[in-house]
Image (cartoon, rainbow, N blue to C red; front, side, top):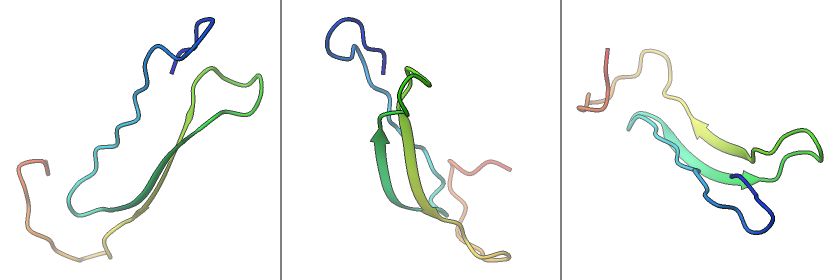
Length: 62
């Protein structure tokens, strides 16, 4: 997000994850004051157990 004397011009808050990963929550937060002009993206996700298998998809690349 890039504020220019008014509302933000755009906002990119996409998260692309593999079907093997469960995305539980995604939120966009304001940064600590005076540290950045970028917003923070908080992702809460679960990774598959080691050795767990799931069907591969076209999105999964070796």
